[in-house]
Length: 50
Image (cartoon, rainbow, N blue to C red; front, side, top):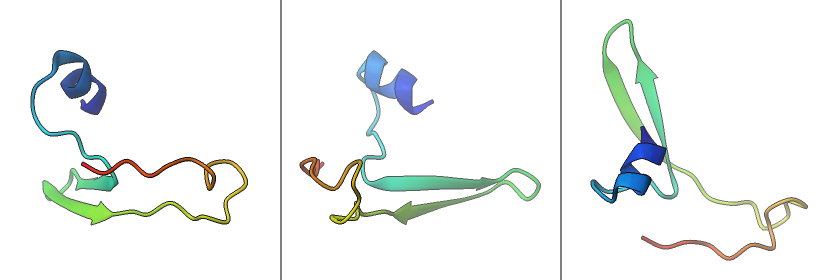
């Protein structure tokens, strides 16, 4: 759904956030995530601020 929002140019993307869904109870939760600067794969990349 996030890819459709970005490609379609509508809505606000969840940059820097993780959306958790409990489909049994229909409970949604947003969690802020941060990049680990010590990560060998992504630690060197610049942070995107929305």
